[in-house]
Length: 237
Image 1 (cartoon, rainbow, N blue to C red):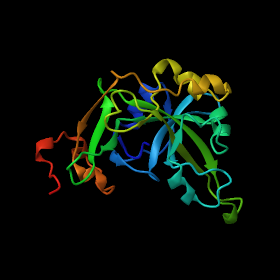
Image 2 (tube, rainbow, N blue to C red):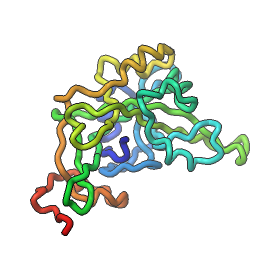
Image 3 (cartoon, rainbow, N blue to C red):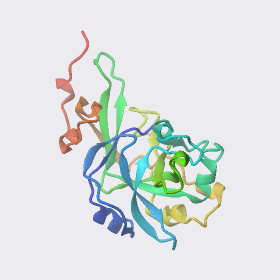
């Protein structure tokens, strides 16, 4: 799964990188984005042009009774996204790209007291373009004037050789040549879309161990991605 990531790039730079416009209130830099946080995502607007907007992370389907279900729908598996009733309609026409500076995963280390977190990012320092889905929900009990909540989920796939030593899953990373096809709401080719949901090339990413301070979602500073010396990590007695 993908349960924490880093979003510290400004929305203007994100928009420039994806050839998009920016149409949302700026979010604070966050080096420990957690489920139910608001996140940036690139989506097609009414004219099918890319635009950066903010979404609630954790998909809240239109039929949901309340937003709590979103905390259980932060990820969608690439292998079944075209089959699950909650995701298949969205795969047809409601797709987003979630930009990340990197993400975290935790590795079980024999003899270590807690799982060891790692920060995973592109070798060249460029943003990750993560495949996702979105939808809109409104509390029906609050009346016709209730505001819409726009939410998203991140699609994951099997780990590549780089990720496998740490975790068996990773987010789907989309290369630039397929961004337009992924965002195009008129592209309903499910076979072609699911063919894009594959592990990233092994050489694209690198990782390093970081402090367990990232385990606490209240910690959000840049120090969370600093490299630590594993020789200083306390082992279980």
